[in-house]
Amino acid sequence: MSVQRVHILRVIEAACIWLFFLEALRVIFSVLFGIIYDQVFAGPLDVWLIISVLLVVAAFLLPAFGTRHPKPKRLALFAAIAVISRVGLCINDPQVRYWCALLVLASGGLYLSSLFFLSKRAVMPGLVIALTLDQIFRVIGQTYDITLRQSWIPVQLIWTIGLLVLIVWFGINRIASKSIGGSPGIVWGLAIGGVIFLETSLLTLPNAAARWTGFDYELIAPMLLICTIPPLIARIRLSIIPLICFRSDVRIGFFSLLVISIMVGYFYSGLIPAGLLGLSQLILIVLVVSLIDGDVDQRSSAGLGMTTGLLFFLMLNFLNAFSFTYPYTLPWMRGMGWVIYLFALLGIGLALRLRYSPASASGILVLRPLWGNLFVIVMVIISVVSVWPKEISPFPQNGEVVAGTYNIHYGYDEPWHLSLEAQAKTILENKADIVALQEVDTGRMTSYCIDNAYFLARRLHMNVVYLPTVEHLTGIALLHRGEAVEIGGQWITSTQEQTGVVYALLLSGDLPVHAFGTWIGLSGEDTLNQINEALAYIGDQTPALFGGDFNSVPGSPVTQEIIAAGFGNPFTMLGIDPAPKTSPAINPLERIDYVWTRGMTPLEAWVPESVASDHRMVVTKVQFRP
Image 1 (cartoon, rainbow, N blue to C red):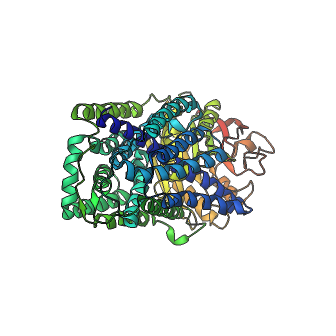
Image 2: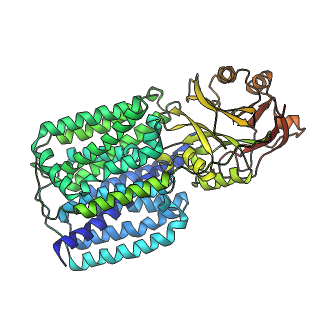
Image 3: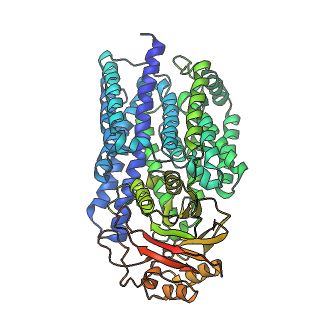
């Protein structure tokens, strides 16, 4: 077999391990979120909280202890463990996913660091292909990676068998190419950690980029894909390496533009910030070409660099988590998410100061112009088709509307199974026309990077109004059928977690329906001030629906203020006493979720028995004919 074909097969293997590694990162942080959430907020604390984190740290430390001169058979062993363990990520069980993700990360880290010695020229194209496939799998699944679903298991098993055949062939034939140059150890590792953080938290997440900039996901998704692929095309990649490696001023210029672009994307919204985030992805991928393909004067263990990068990535993710949970952890982290991105960029900038020289072009070609262009076209077509607008179900025109409220718990049920599909089924079975949503994540690593609002809207053929309240990616939303005449939202004063009110004006024939949703703070918050601000935003709009998780039981000061504003509780108005409890979903103890109505006549009210979230959905059917 020719050297070129062997190289391509190695790139395929590397791309799959990179992809599984990135997916395992997403899974492990999502599972850890559930572990930490339960122990810190629900209690009691136990030793598993510490052990679960330390095991992840240990997996990230392993590459540093790997041999500096690995053999092909050992590389094959690491790859095989990662490939087999990846199957378990399709099983929607937190414990299974935790242990399988841990194995993928441990073996995948050892594989990737060993690959730098045995076949370095496969590392960069493998990473770019993995980032491309990762975007495709998530865009096909409406931001929910189709390869992490249990229905994917048969495909994953076939994929695993094919890869194992390739891995065994590599191991038996002891195929390896000579590694040229080295990696700058710790400094290089900081850059790799920063790159992985930026890619997994923003630049390969079109839903996150869309929420940052308020721009259309349907346009950002193909744009980011196009900006990821260029280094796979031979002519582009071969022209990048000398330019970046010979010219330190070019590297500094690119890096400066990268910093500016990401900061503009964070603080501003619209077309220009969205375009700059696409430019950021292109620049970052170009810089990564020099980091991985370029040779450096300082030679060290790639394993040490990989461990440094993974620990830096771990630190960045924990700090980023604090920027979302600032009221309960570090109050000074409120609104400081941008600082975490600057830290990630700083790690990249340090490595760009090293002296590079162009590597040999031997084995570097991956896609010839024809195949490269074809690959780009196919990937973009898949992306465009996947995000193409779906037909929206019409809003009722007979003056009768079914409205609900649902705290979706970031897409999880109470035992932390990913349950967005079950939540969508709950909404569908109850024939809701309007649903106020709370605890909505739209691109966080701790919830599989899924956009809850977008996924549910696409799944249910509904529109959605989203109000970001924390770091662009957490907030409240309002699902609705039909087209809204007007949408809006406003933050309300919050001393703890920031919250607000979201709004949509809909028409049933000529009759207006003013729909509002909110989430009111927990104990310790000035909830009376919050509800009064929310009611002031609503004003005298009638007829009106006001749904949400109010964190207040019937008869509390918050509910009394709502009643004083002219709203009624459908359960009380229909004589349903006591009304069903809503929280927690399993064996509920209290009623804190409501759909209030004003200027409407309730016809029915009920609480479905679904336990797809940690709250139960509340539904009411109302009539508002004049």
